[in-house]
Image (tube, rainbow, N blue to C red; front, side, top):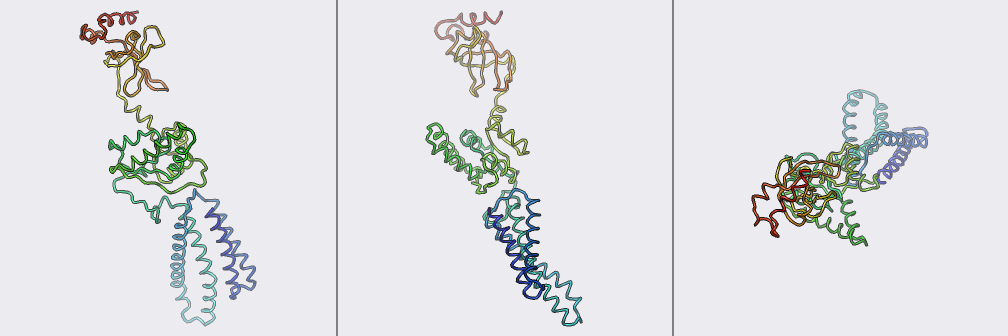
Length: 369
């Protein structure tokens, strides 16, 4: 909206300036001269619209652009005088008067045109150049990329705070203001579950900010062209050159299409799971019967499901097992195993609660079938 207003002011100002210059004697028909000035400004705006990029508009950028345009105008005028002045040496007075008329017509139009172009460039390149107050981006030396841009799902999840506390994050952490707004809306929800999730997300933000080992920035820039939070995040990640941290699988797919680097906490958690190979021995608590006869089901500390053949009669007990196979599915990893007779037998009768020393042998029966 701000850039549209600037465009209108530019066109009107160009027309009025051309009309005023025409009345000074630069043209026989000042009204026609003013219309030509407004038409030229309109053509310049149309060229800018055709080649425009994503714009993030702020008033400070406008002021800087105007100052830059005026500086360029002064520089161009001095440059023009350096080249024209030697040609006027010894010329009649009429030549000087013609030069004055040319400058009266050219300098104001040049100032408006250069100011407009400078404002337009600064508005669209503000996040790339990063030197406009208050958008100064003091990036520490040695930091890579544009940092990590967090979305709402990661803040609600909470595991990112544990990564920060473990010292695994050494780049700036960026939390957009519109993400905080979405968290606040969730925290104010009438639904109890959503309200709890929103409050946990805000608590995680406070927890990350309290960590002195990392740099946390609340990014104030918005993306008015993108109506949804996910679209805003993708656009902002591209502008800042940041990696997007999310748990949203669909957002990750769109980010890959948009050529945005993504860090998925779920995939990171899967990558950190210990590698288990067939033949290895584990200790697992059988929590419930399995779907097949004689099977028991337990879980490792990271949530990996373990299917124990012959473990149905060991529900509620922690037993040693030997891994027979590992299957990777779309839902995660599944481990199949059977009770380890050597480990159970080594414990003797005293190691089997309930006085059932034969249970290891009984459980091994189905495995031989």
